[in-house]
Image (cartoon, rainbow, N blue to C red):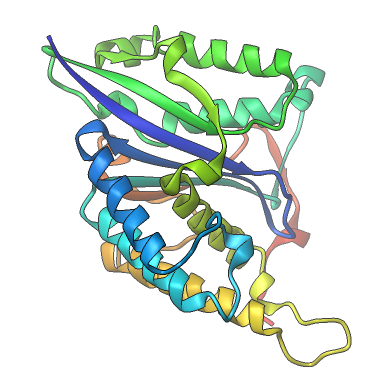
Length: 281
């Protein structure tokens, strides 16, 4: 039996936005590409004298060019399917209804579970019965209590025993699930920049102006420029890409094959709230 490994870095944004919320992001790298990916990104980061943690909240006009250069290298990996990126979010336009108390209390972990289970199309990642693929999962520190963490990790481990994962020879071992600090993982940091850019744009933060001002701040303008670069790189892969909806598929396998995808999670039972429709101003 041949053995391969996929390393998946995952993070979330707990903030609820004006239009969109529940943002989750994931980056997947095959074990055969991991070392070269980390080494190259780390080299670029160090050469730019980005000594601290790279993250969307740190983007300013002074650091814009450095963030553009690091993001360029990250998207080179994405474009060549060395790194796969998945972004999930919900639209406030669709408000879930008929939720049980348990569902309300565990919304965070239940959405995270759905994100991991479906976003990468892992069940389509291995069609070779002679190859086993283990999954190593790095979650940025989970903002939940210890008992919730234990239950969440149990659900993830049990997923490895499901019919679709077993059919693809996917293995999830307890020792391969870890919480990590993002400042120690460059791939997680670069993914945070993309996740932050999507939250920024989808919630119209690029339009914000300081109180009493008729002009946007330099930091907001810099973030918009970085977002535009990211969007241009996505559209180089998928012309006409719409960041606010689920990325289309021609076959179920596309959920795995595509290097970059978005997923708007829509609750099965929901009510429409038209006040959250974005309108051109």
